[in-house]
Image (cartoon, rainbow, N blue to C red; front, side):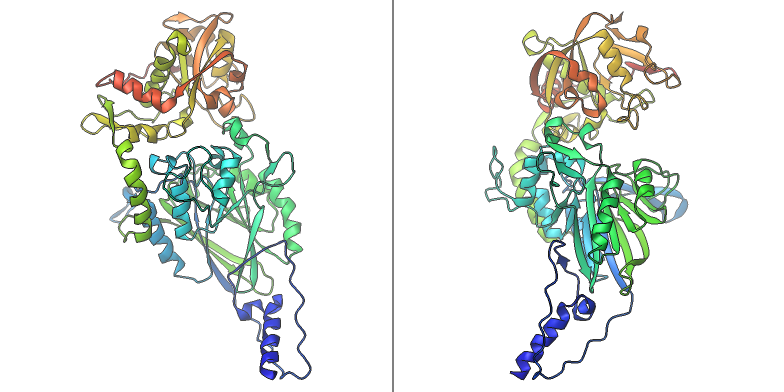
Length: 584
């Protein structure tokens, strides 16, 4: 009996927050639960020595990624300083889940107090290997890698909140079922959405934060997306949801966390900035993340960001701020030192590490890729046609690109027939063009086309008058509205042309007389049939004038129109960039 009582006494002491560090840590806690009262040791029990409280600093390793976008396979590069000549740079192959998993294992092994996190856009806008299965392969891959937390990004909402909830809880797709032949189990990691609120219930779509203990010290991880998500996602994807200000959301949570004895706070936010330096620099950092961090409560210790697909390692307003490039090509290795007495972060540092492809592949990830490859390969490798040269998404100073021109042409061709829309002009949003189209022996595959346009948008034809077209062109430019943080020059179909001047005031940058269709100036009062995708048609990217279109007719999927155009035009020529002209 004395032995049993002694065991009970030790367990009681270990249950006390004061002694957690002495009894082990590294576990998640539910912030909604209270710690039960300790069991009193019977008087007859043998006295148990009180453990010595740990006073040594606690080292924690946080490994962060962002904007993975379902890129399970490698295929990209990262620019790094040339080891042989510091004045030069070289490109190294990076990314792919097989290599990412190996790198994460290696980095985790440095410190048992660790956590893997993501700052959003884990899924959405994915290559065919993941997208064909509604990104279930990516969730499966991340489960195996040991990801613990993912702050929702804007692309997590591409298929709507109901589908996103399925990503967390599992179950087969309501329309397509479980294509892999087994029930989808959902994410083992937690989605976080502190600033995404269900308009009816007033509750957040996912938890606001998660708490994890490291050797008895609690660290809170607040996760959220950018407040402007509704402006860059198809409205149906965010229907019934409200997106709150990022800094205000965090600051409102700080007092709540402090009442739980939490002093160490990390923010995972799908919003970011840009900078002019290398992977681990912070030269001239700018963008939304700067304002957000400057407005955060001083209690916040570190910020893991994303969205801009940039890499940076910054100190902003006394806080560590990181971003890890894109597509799993970089990991932010973040080291936090906790004081067990104050329970706060007393030191922080970070290093962005390239996920090079010169390490061993993770066998579990290889098996996942092999499984889905067998299902997708026949469709992915199907030859759809030939093109005369590479079509690139890179734009010239006026905002035009060869690939964008061809996509706009394909959408016009698909909707020109009277029964398909009777379109005269087509416009394509640049953010919807995700990769270059580079032929192999002049041939291009369906998989390549899907990689270029992975969203599955449908074409929409509508009637706009000339004045509305002019207004739409003005909405391309920064300064036109609060929802336009940078220029978004639309890609236009053959036969349509105009010029613009960056030095003129917002709303007056486009020369009305220069707006022409087949060489004839458009009239502000005449009607024209215009084709865009459903994302733009619903006001996406701030093009609100498109919601005023009339006589609307839906059409084919964008990638199908693209495929049909390539097929119908063998050895398709690379277009000359002369549709949009920038005067100054």
